[in-house]
Length: 267
Length: 107
Image 1 (tube, rainbow over the protein chains, first blue to last red):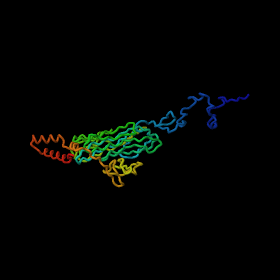
Image 2 (spheres, one colour; image 1 turned 180 degrees about the horizontal axis):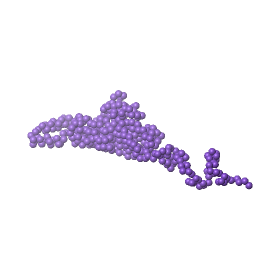
Image 3 (cartoon, chains in turn orange, green; image 1 turned 60 degrees about the horizontal axis):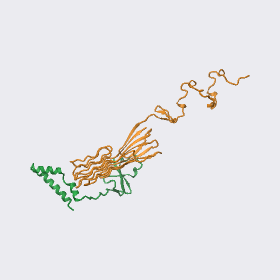
Image 4 (tube, rainbow over the protein chains, first blue to last red; image 1 turned 30 degrees about the horizontal axis):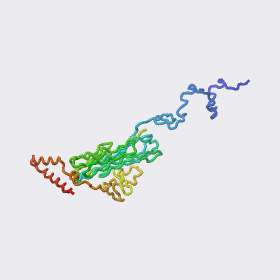
């Protein structure tokens, strides 16, 4: 009686090649459990090309549990500094940012006449962690410190991308008050941040005490009022600081310091 | 860096820094400004006007208190006159003191 099965001795070495196996003729149902172990596979038989993972395999990527090749880089990658209005563009590979938004400081006012000036308030400061995976660009508007004026507001706002976030805003410090007053002027408020810090108050003008300090910002001290010289009003240190006031007849006031935006970018 | 005003309905709502060329979607509406532009002031299409300062509501006594020469000036002038026989600073002090009284008469 003729045999109907194929024995090992019926298949000589090299007798079956890929051309002898029809496409899709071997599926999981033709392979018994544990039939293919390490001993049945030659070294390098299963390589990168045989994997179905998305993304691109390279020396800088690794295979994640969700079957995707992801960047191996992580952590703080770069920092962008804005001292003037512009557009922030997300660098390649960045997924999160921490934005620091500082409003401009308030000015002191003209004291060439018979009245002194208080100090200007400092700008508000907001700090926000943002997931920018789906954000491509954002507008950066940097508030200016301007003579005799409240400081300008600084904002970081979404421009393009499918994601969204609330505007991060540091408002400007209030301009100083001219003449006698016992009340200081307010620092700018801040909104939209995980941290929102109102700018320091500018000291009120109280006669000839030369104590009209500008408000302190998150980044630096307010202007120091000079007791001599002309003008006695001085700008402060760092973005958003308020200007100090001068006594009567001591000269023109100074602008508060400009605001700024710092973007810390993480992969 | 130059300052630009953001104007809404004729009122200056913000003053910002811009280099005049960096890309920003709102830059076409920004107006290059000088010292006359202040937040809260107005823009008529060609000129900026500063906001009106608040009225001076101080009493004459408050005005005098704020503007009198300092106590330190008084001590120095008086001492030099009495001990050093030099009345230069004292004379200047009296002139400044009287000017305040003239500038802010009792009312």
